[in-house]
Amino acid sequence: MDDGIQGFYKDKVVFLTGATGFLGKVIIEKLLRTTELKRIYAMMRPKRGKDIQERLAIWQKDPLFEVLLKAKPDALKRIFVIAGDCLDADLGINRSDRQLLVSEVQIVIHGAATVRFNEPLHVALAINTRATRLMLQLAKEMQHLEAYLHISTAFSNCVIFRIEEKFYPEHLTCDSNSVLAMSELLSDQMMDKLTPTLVGDFPNTYTYTKALAEDVVLRESGDLPLSVFRPSVIIATHEEPVSGWIDNLYGPIALIYGVGHGVLRLTTFDKDGLASLVPVDYCANAALASIWQTSKEKSQRNARSQPAIYTLAPSENNLLVNKDFINHSLIVRKDFPITKMIWYPFMHSISNPRLFPFAAFFYHTLPGYFYDLALRLTGRKPRLVKLYRSIHANIAVLEHFLHNSWHFETKSTDRLRVMMSPEDRRLYNFDMEALDWKKYFRKALFGMRLYLAKEPPTRESLEQGRRLFYRLKILHYSLVTLLCVIAGTLLWTLVRLFI
Image 1: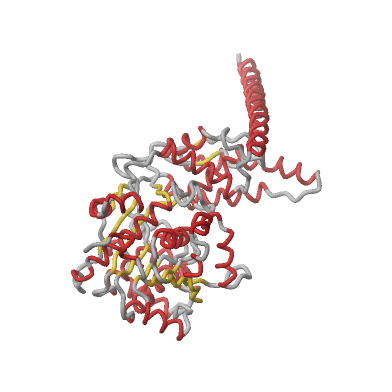
Image 2: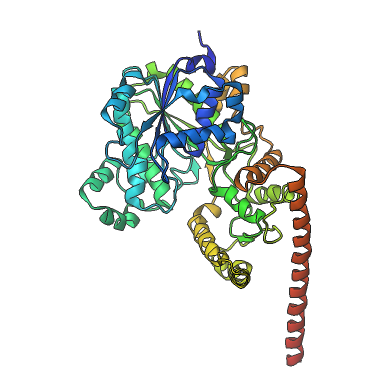
């Protein structure tokens, strides 16, 4: 008898990499809150002076875990930290921990990755590709393995624009075996010099090494009960455990964060292009459901059959256009204003990326120099011009994604939802067709203000933000009017000179 997703995870032992990542933390929270699993082994590495136990202890105060800890105060005691690092040749796991994993683990979730688009190739290759091979080798030793989930990305094959739920090894310049063998023979510097040749048509080392990782899975997974999960761009939570939770400044939310502060005023993208965004809680739910289904199908797997692929992306019946993404975000700017705005929040876009540097000089760089001059005169450290250099560099890195659209097949994911019980569909919701984008962005913008800007959701704070918002709005339109008058006067003067 099928006890559903909750029943499947009861008393299970899970090993998860990428535990401190955005999606990894949400998966852990959802497992602990909705199931009675036995234990989670979470692979972590020391970071920024904090050892692995300190990194775990911080979660006690993380808003993501508040709902869980109110209902289950001892829930985090079911997490056991495994010291490891995907950069290391053996994953950095010591012998005793490795034996523990081999003898106990039933479910593996491999989500560790570097998501930096401009990561040096040798680093991205070690973390995203070689570690995938090492994880598969470890999984093959596990005595009780029931399901293995490899977390990829919907953009792992972004050299084409209609992507089905299948593998695409033909788009690689060299297969994963050859590239990994090359990385063992050549120095890091030499591998980095080969980046243009190896990466080929891929826009960056991130998507390239994730594509290579999928090739590793295709070649080396054998008869493991394995599936691949491909989420598109992951953004703030929609519903649970709290609306709008986010802990990073990656992707579209970073853009809105910059707009909300009045710093980012100009970007470049195809206004009619598609924004391939998915809430992180939907990703966690889809991942957990796909593991359940993978376990059910493990007896059907053999070394010759390809692993199932589950893609989570906006439904073809509920697509989000770039201009609507911006509009949904700007509509609520006065409802959740940031008290540290430096200018009235607005956003203009240039469709031609070649014109962007010229326009950005007037929208960003020139005002940045004036702002930094004011900071110097008041004895403070200038920062805006430097910030704009970083923003413009990031926009250049994202150009391929800002001016192209992708259509993702989600047939396997849609079938997965159909196979779930009504109760499981409610508890592990990832229905992208039913998502109300307008309502979602209202929650996401509130979350951005609360969790990223660290501004309290009190009436006093919101009123303070609104007062600043309206003052800056008056200044903005006064300046626009003044500039229009000056431009008109200069134009009239020039016309009179030639008449």
